[in-house]
Structure formats: structure tokens, C-alpha cells
Image 1: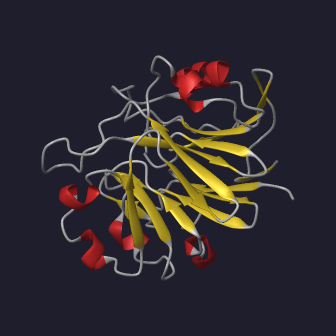
Image 2: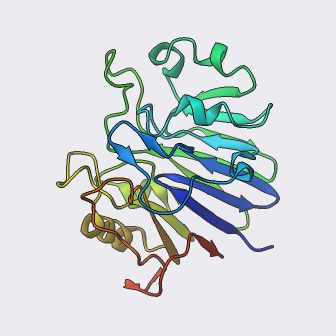
Length: 236
């Protein structure tokens, strides 16, 4: 059975593997604060259909409550430990979701998939309020293929060892604004991450939502070389 990855914009992807639909960091809005969708329309209603949603950290462009409200009742949501304290009233506002707080090293079975939680180098707190209560996370989804969703992260020692062997990597390439802030990847740093991880394919995410960001169009990576133009979907 083929594995399909669809990029909907920003860090939002659907991974379809072993009959399970996995959604990452859903952001369905056309605009959020300084972020504005620069390419394409917001995702269609079908993008909100998922068996499980993976939330990498608590920043509003990754844990976006109005977008989460569009998910179907009963959807499982894996969130960083401390989310309930950092985002008061989240479960009350989203009663249709089933929240599970996780930390690096946890494994959660969803149907025929296993979701393994890994570390990320990023400020994971819910800005602009509160202390740093929740870690930023990445996820490795294992079924017919092994798919790594990095969320937001910078390069860190032991990244390849912790993530392990993967078939496809969903890596952020947008940096932060016109410069590379701490805990982020830009295209060149993302290429370095790919050299460490050595996946069969890669999908660039977390870009195309700021006026001054340069578009990144190459995605399929094999043997360290970019091949082709990314149209939002890759089949493995």
C-alpha cells in the first residue's frame, strides 16, 4: 500500500499510511498575526479529517485552536506534556478531541501505526504568556514507511541517532523572519539535517507564509541532490 504525504501549507501535512490519516500542526487560516498564506487557498474541508493529530509545540501557528475546532469528533491529539497547564481551557474549548500528553521516548499505537515521540530544539512554550512548561517535539510515524515530522527545530547533537532510519523527512525550511533564529532551520541548515538523517525523500514545510521569505520549491531529495518541483504531495 503506498504512503502519501500531502503538504497543505506552513507545517500542516497529512500522512496516509496503513489506512490511518495523520495530520500535523493544523493551520487552516488564511492569516494569523504576521503570518499570511502566500501560495494557494486554505486547505479544503477534507484536510480536517484525521485519525490522529500531532502537535509539535504550543506556538499559535502550530497549536491553532480555531483550526483544531474543525477536526472531526473523536480525533486523537498528541500534545506536549504540560499543554493543559500552558493552554488553560483547551479541553473545554475542544471537547471533541481526545488529548494525550507525551514526551520524547513515548510510543503511541494508532491502528497499524506506531508514533514515536522525539526531541526538538525549539522554544515550546505558549507565547506570550507563562513559563516554559512544555517541550517542543518531533514525531516518527512508522507503518508501511517511517515518516519523520520535525515540527520546529534547529540542528542538535544526536538528532540522527534519536530519530533513526526514516524514509521521508518533513523538515521546516523557513527560518524565522529574514534571519535564522535560535531553534530554527533555514534551507541550508535543513540540507545539513538531511545529510545527517539520509531519508529517501524529503518534504520542505514551514515556509511560504511571510512576505519577505524566499520561496523554496525543491523537495524530493535523494543522494543529497534536489530533484524536481514539489506540488504538495509525495507518494512513497
